[in-house]
Structures are given as structure tokens and as C-alpha cells.
Image 1 (cartoon, rainbow, N blue to C red):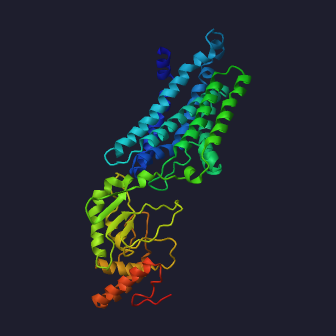
Image 2 (cartoon, rainbow, N blue to C red; image 1 turned 180 degrees about the horizontal axis):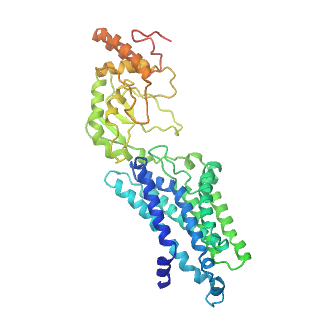
Image 3 (cartoon, rainbow, N blue to C red; image 1 turned 30 degrees about the horizontal axis):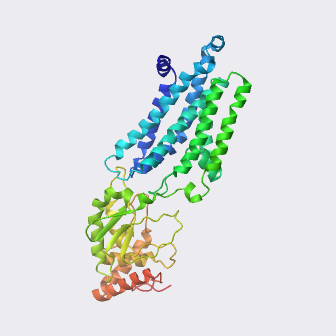
Length: 445
């Protein structure tokens, strides 16, 4: 233990850990909105930043691995009766302690940010994803130790840092999905929808290959001959083979799988009913009055919707949902603090398609007509969506200008006739019929 303590103070382990914390915390706090919605987004975002952290651990190990060569004591230590492996264990232990602790500190820094807002905690998946990420840093550091001891040149560490970034990045985008899932620590960690997770079977396969990589690094570091170093490749080959054999084959499991619990709807106890996904349950209270205001506007139509649901459809789900007339589905955005983002967009979002859910398969949409009809219900002139939700423009400004003209035509009609026209637009949207000729001032296609 005394030797381990000395290694913790004098080796590169503490410096590597400090660098990991600084880079990791800095990376996640640059854009908190990517993971502020919950625990799994946080765990997966940190895993994605292994693109930076893994090469850093690899380079730190290589720098530490050349210590005997740098101090010119390799031949002296070789003459001592103490076994080589026993001399190397404190260094291995120091790296194996400090880097996982650093990874957990980065995770803890993120938890502090979301602890009061994130309500859905998939404990097992969160623990597994985080644990495999920490294990990957041990493997990178031990592999770096082995390479640094074999190639103790000054340029080895920076060269490995660059090579590590390229290796992680290129293997993520170039390898077959099964190979990447089994071998690459960042595979599947890029967030494409709020309900995304990493399947524990995929994490298990990655843990096997990562452990094999760590064993290979250890053997390279303690090996005393080229024969022993060549034999160190055996655990790597066996581990990679086993990982590829056990990784699932289903593409829906490998790429952007859905956590069904996170996607479940959580609803208000009273009516009109407002529902959000479980991962966004913390914004239900803030969303409810805005959603009910939208339902009040839609209530001018006969057989109007009586509920608002978060749209939990994703472009990666091979399912077709029927259009509903009893509930409006809307997207829910989360801001960088984990709270409801863009509240001013909720009312227009509910009303803009007259309460009819968007259907990608419907080709008879006319944004000008929909917009004019929706803003007639709102009782105000159509306004451009530009800037309402940064990064998203729902209607082109030119479409808004045309909608203003149709809206003015609706206002010139008697209220009953205008309502009948707007109702006809809504009914046509429900059956995916052509709506372009329903409002005055616009001819049918």
C-alpha cells in the first residue's frame, strides 16, 4: 500500500485523472441542453466524449510506460531479484484507481446539474453504461503503458493520442454495426431521440472486448521478452472474438434502441388531460396550463380534441400510428436547465394543424391553408415561426405571407361560414384529403 501511495503521488496517474476531469466536465458543460433531460442522456453523452477521454488515457499510459527508459534505470531494475510483474503492479493499480474515479467525478458533476429535475432513473442501464465507460479508460491506460514501455520514444504518447482519436472516430463510422457495438466505446452513444438507451447486452459485449484489451495491455507492460509480448495478443483476439459472438444481431438493439419506460406517458389526474413521456415528467406542471389553453382554442371546432399528448414517435421507429381526433400530439422541448423550453411555442404547436397529428405519409398537406385556419381560431394574424424555437423553422416566411392573405379572407366571411370552412379543413386533414381549395382565395390543386 505504501508503494501504491507513492505511485499515486509520483506517477502520471493523478495528472491523467485531473486532465480527464477537466476535459470531461468542460465538454459536458459546453452544451448542457444535450443531456439535461435525464440520467441516461447524461450517461450516454459522457460515453460519447470518450472520443476525447479514451485517447487521453492511452497517451497518459504511454507517457508513464516510458518512465524507466526516461530515468535510465531499466537495466538496474532488471538485476534485482524482485519479479518484474510485482514491480509493475503499483503503476497498473494507480491508473486503475484514478481514471475510473475521474470518470465518476465527471458523471457526478453532471448529476449535480440534473438532480432536481430528472425524474426517470433507469438505475441498471445507467450503472452499466457508466461502468463500461470507466472500464474503457482502464483498458486505454494499460494498453498505453504496454506500448509506452515497448516504444519509449518521446513522440509515442502524443502520437498515440492522435491515433486514438482517429481509431475511435473511424471505427465508429466505418465498421459494421455489430463490430462497432462490440469494440467501440462510443458506439450508440450519440443521442437522436429522448428515449434512447444502450441495451445491456451490447454493453456486456463491449465489456468483454474492453477487459480483453486491458489484459493485453497488462501483459505487454510486464512482459520481459518479445515472445511474451507476442503472446499478449492472444487475450485480445479471444476477447474480441467472444464479444462479436455475443453482441445482438437485431439492428433495433444495436442502433438507437428505445427505453419503453422512458417513453411511457404520464398524465394529469384531472381533465382536460395532458400527458408527457416519463422522462419529461418534470415539465408536466409547466406544460399543463399552456396545453389546456390550446385545447380551449380548438374547442371552437365540433368534435374537438380533449387531450394533449407528447409526441413520442421517432423517425427510427418502424411503426405507423393512425391520425387521432381525440388528442393532439406535440413535441416537448427541454432547455439547458432541464425545464420546459420555448413555452411560447406550445400554443401555436397545438393549434397549427387544427389538432390533427402530423403524418409523414400524408402528401396532401398545404401549409398556407393550415396556417391561415389555425390563426383564425387563435384570433390573430399569422406570425412567422422564425426564432420561436432556435434551430427550427416550421414555416417559411413566404408561406406566412400567403397565409396572412387567406386569413384576411376568412375574417371577411361571417363567423359561422368561416368556422365551417375551418372545420372542413380539419376534417380533410383527418382523412388526408386535399385541403388547398377549401378556403376562399386559394384554388384546388
